[in-house]
Amino acid sequence: MLPLRDINRTRSFPLINYLIIFANILVFIRQLASPDFEEFIYQYGFIPAQFNFLELSSYQFIFYSIFLHGSLFHIASNLWFLHIFGDNVEDRLGHLKYLVFYLLAGCFSVLFQYSFNPGSEIPMIGASGAISGVTGAYFVLFNRSKIEALVPFFGFFQIIYLPAWFFLGYWFLIQLFSGVGSLVTFDINQGGIAWFAHIGGFIFGFWTVANFLKK
Image 1 (cartoon, rainbow, N blue to C red):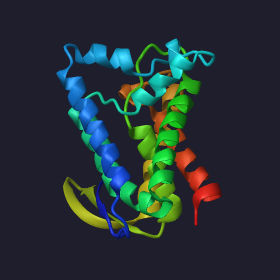
Image 2: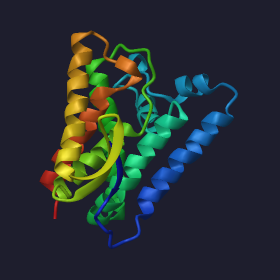
Image 3: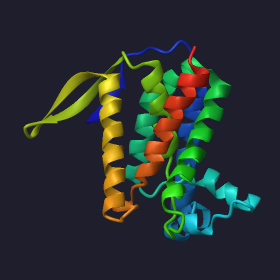
Image 4: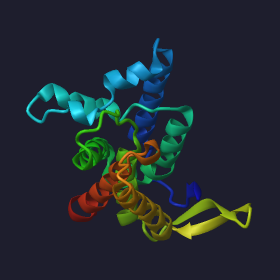
C-alpha cells in the first residue's frame, strides 16, 4: 500500500518538516557528488561493530546515519512518508518539540537495531527509523484520521481511504513479522533493511507521545 495523502489539515506551516526533508536531500546530493558513493557511506554511516559506548566520538555516526541514504528510491520513499505524516505531528507538537522528537526517534531506532546485531560490519543508514517514530506519533494523535492510499487489488491499483490506525497498524505488523523472520533465518539485515530500526522508532514515537507529549 502506498499512502498518497492524509485528510488532516494543519494549522501552521510545517517549517521543521520541510527543513528536515531539505537537509536529507542536500546530504544525498553530497553523497552523489563524492568520488566514491559506497566509501562515503562507510565513512559516515553507523557501523555497529565499530561503536563504543564509552567513546563520545562514536555517537556522531548515529546522528550522521539518519541523514544518509543508499539510493534514490530509498530517499524518495522515506521522504514521501515524512511529507505525509510529519506535518501533522509537527503541527500538534510544535516546531521545537518536533525537531527534538524526530532526532531522538532516529537515534533510538539506530540503537534499537544495534542491540539486535552489535557485531555487524554493515553500515546502518536512512531516515526510516526517525520517520517510523513520526508514524508512531501519528498513530497516537490521529488514529481516527483517513489515509488515501494506492492499494493493489487483483492485479490492478485502486485508490482507497483507509483508517490511519489500520494503515499504520498493518505497516507496523509487516515490520514486526519481518524483523522476527530475520531472527529466525539468522539474517538480521535481511534484504538490506533494518527492520528493528523501524520497530524501535515506531515504539519510541508511540510511547513518547502517548505518555509525555499528547495534549
